[in-house]
Image (spheres, one colour):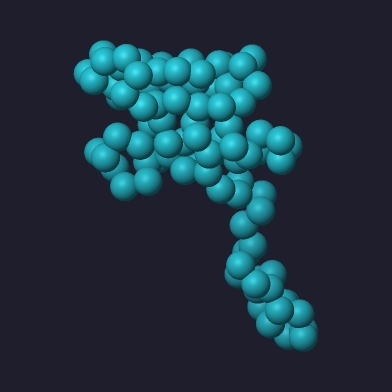
Length: 102
């Protein structure tokens, strides 16, 4: 998919980056949504994540389409809130011999 970020397309012209790979139906919907938010100045710092590993590359390249240098790592690929480990869980883990490596 070419030229996903409408605002950057207008500012820089065609084929200057802002491209993604992925299943066109899913990627197109995400591209249009993020571009609409970006176009109206409503795109906040965002973490994109997925449950299907087949979408990893699409999500990663899509995140890059909306990092324009105005905010460090404005859109990034990573784990969703459900994957964050709370303080109490860390305390429980530290009491066991289990070691987590990230």
